[in-house]
Length: 142
Image 1 (tube, rainbow, N blue to C red):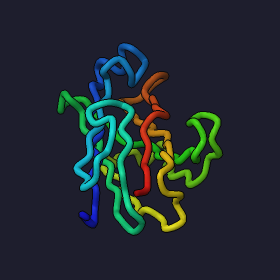
Image 2: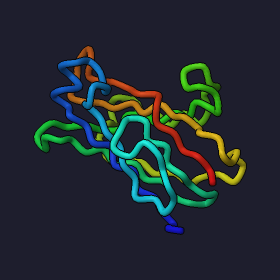
Image 3: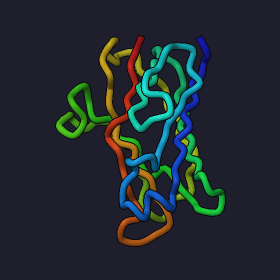
Image 4: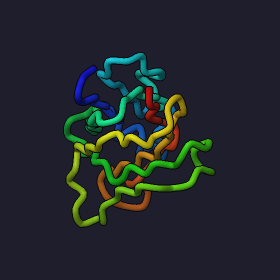
């Protein structure tokens, strides 16, 4: 087992801003974990983790001249995403949005075998539709 699993969040910023969506191929996620994560290369990545392991998210823009930052990661609970209880909100205010990397440690109390969905909120430029999110990725404890 690796002590850290890295999750790359790759965004087509121009496509996402045009569509006002991170879907339609505008976002893909991959990890380098030791276990068989599902949904590699999609917005529905389910990364398999173990307690004590560090998880690090990195935001990357397809076009390197268009900025994308992670605004927040909010775990939704073991429910079906939008209806899950929100806990562990790790958000920043708009004055400090220069984070391309977020990291956290998998807690020992995380229920095994259950996908723990999270909302990934990304900031692209500024303006009315510059903050977009998805609720489909998850972490799952082995």
